[in-house]
Length: 402
Image (cartoon, rainbow, N blue to C red; front, side, top):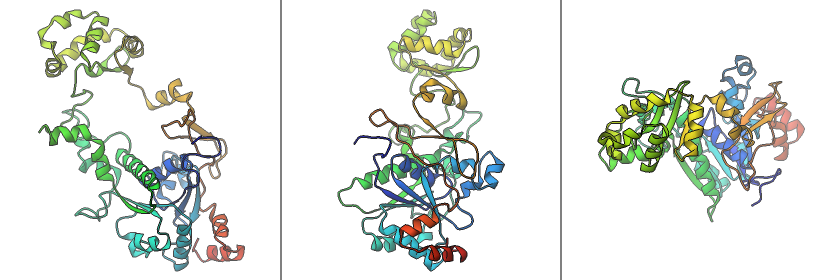
């Protein structure tokens, strides 16, 4: 499929986004960027909690918090009271023409509303229904509330983050929410490709995170090695980790023997190649801290970026440890259309930059065309497309249904 300025690979797919805060909205954010039409169904008068979250209190007070702006561009917003029978009817009418519904309520909430999978499947047998939760739809923890930090803790992620002195530590961004969202988006795309459409997808954030911990989990299950915090060291090889330079840290991954040899020679430390203490990979792993100290006697004489340029040129993977702003401003990112700017965003009144998906299709990055929506801004348009008259829409609005 050719990707152009009009459509994306999911062009023609309609998604109902009933999610809040991060994992679910992030999943639908991916689908929107890939071309799907995403209708965000929000609570009347409140909307997505993320509308009131973020680093800018003024935007949060306006219901356009940065946490919301980050992952809701390209979506339309419909407010709907799902406790009102008329609200339920509207959702069912939307389901008739939808391909996907995504929700991240606690297990059982949609059933109690009379809008569970079995009910909606009867309305649209081809519906792909994706339920995202902290622990899955069943099991002893199914009813527990779950936020990113909770999942990071119970999954073991925190126990292996940091070093022996600082662990356990939380990963510096909402890892579990993001991985859960990506797992949902991937699963939805797979279900869209099925010969026979229609599925109930049960996404567990806990299991999604564990699935990404393949090496750590396998070292335990297969190798009998208890996972432990390694700080900035790569436990599979040495020298491989973060090293001190004159102006900060550099990551070096000399994982192959030839890379180790090239590194030692470039640093003028050929003597280390003759030292039996570092003769083999296992020797270097066992003596990694002594080896790091030896290499830092040279690395600390110059800046990290200079070393990175030279080491990469001789086939030794290396990169300076950068801040988030430095990464975003680097030409490797800034010149590949990764950031999209909306000059005008209703309710914000200043330009907003958002990140896109991390993939190009035939050399072009898929993106969304519209900024994040104000709460309920598309309610009338969507209802009128379902056959509701202008008067009927106004009545629903006055009576708190939309």
